[in-house]
Image (cartoon, rainbow, N blue to C red; front, side):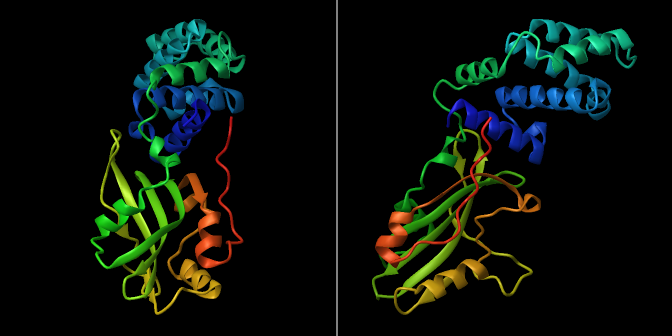
Length: 267
């Protein structure tokens, strides 16, 4: 994950799951972004309407962390006056934030880089899963070959990974499966891979077996019935990153999919 990816990830996760879902440095990025957006669009009053006094204190600390000392001081003064909202204090803080006084996007990038010298704990969102680990966690023993066709990272109430996998069994049968796993801790601990399912939808299939290598129409039908999606709707979760392994599709299935993942927003 580059600093731009981390910044984008923090803003997406904060927007979807809230500030409490964020690591400290990610929270700083989120709060700076929120302050910028509210001050630019509706004024600093709207930021104070949305967030409590402690969040204002944390936002001052976030600006201080990236070297924006004037903004940090102005927000500390606003915080100290709460619940009163003296116009002169609010106007000063709001104007400084709107002008990006004392910092630029590059300062945020440098801050993120320093905060994660060994990489972000969620960097796995950009790493192809280990297909052998997937098979082991599914407890499948009669497997000749397995192929990851596509992979994506999503934010629902937590960070979740999904994989579209093709399995060749030793009895010459083939399986298409839509899998998921949840991130348990930001140290990189995950629940085991499991077959996706929707309890109240009988038309849903996360696992389908075939007597021979599935044809293109069969793969497309499975993608439909397993609810695998390349274009993620906002109400279904926040898309982080995705990869389609086109060489694998072409080499094993003999065709490539028409659809593609959206590219993550770049700042």
